[in-house]
Image 1 (tube, rainbow, N blue to C red):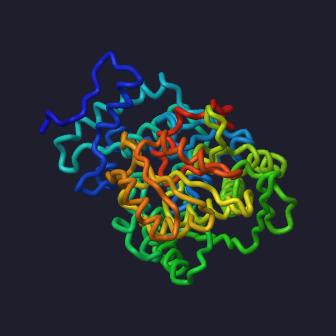
Image 2 (cartoon, rainbow, N blue to C red):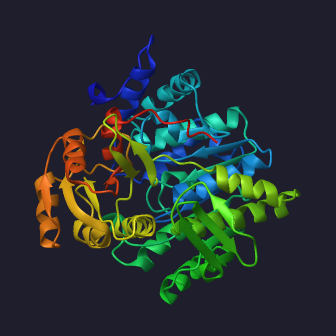
Length: 452
């Protein structure tokens, strides 16, 4: 079996290192948690080196993590953020002070970590996966800088996720919006999924969760917290109001003045509120004070690729790039489009992994869609699962079943061009997978830096 083990050879380049990571296993039969735990133990437990906020949820993980990192950064703390998936470069996953890791630092870490991963190939748990190695890079990077706080997103679920190897008793857990996704792994009810997400709650520690409208889901999370003697703070979103207009997205929390958000959409109000609640807890626990002006700056400065990202093609076509890939996220994207472009349905360019609930996704986006150009992407690695792209013709067929005009264009660049020919005043929306967003970057005009 050794012939199939990925090897990183001397004299490697940045491209060699990324290719090496993409050749790593995408999944394995043995428990990923046990394998990840042994892997990180062999590396010296870098996941426990710094104070950590651990974020899980079906939707909003990246936004909450970004808002929180930006708030902490505005207060002068050095913050590491491990975000996934990436859109344009793998370096986006490993950020300190809002800037991606350098190629040189990335190569040094891969050089350090690869031999340890390769040394586990013949062990009982097997060789670590791409996601487990990516976590190791983040943990080791944040430990070596070092950062004051690390904000870590889960991959899938929480209970058995490779990030759930963080053992620090002062870990703060944050649970965002919960809905149906990855049902083949997490269960086909929101309560079952909630139990997985709540698996990140630290024993004897503290957790913050968005209050779910379902009593059963709330009870599930509270039960896990009680079992773990974890103090649980449930954020009630009914006290949060959010306005969106051409002037941007503004959130009002309780009696506060409206605060501008760097990420667009009404749903971002809840994500910002969760991040602020987490920052409030950290400040109280660690003996520092939140400055309202710096909170305002942090929320306004937050940026995140692939979340209602407005871009222009080299031909002048306006696009919205959003990696929404499940019904919860697509409903939020649809709401934002309707707020900003009322009465102007958009033409969508769509591609999905073949494990997605395509009918639920199409039902969520239908209210804002004038038509669908279904397309495909090439799987290049870097995800958390092994699903491949759903055929464009299948997406188009299901879209027509939902009453949407649709065609299949397998090449994503041609699909964007085709959508632009029939689009009205509203932008073309490119969505369904972050891999699709990556596939269309070659036709985009350069953007200003997205770093905080």
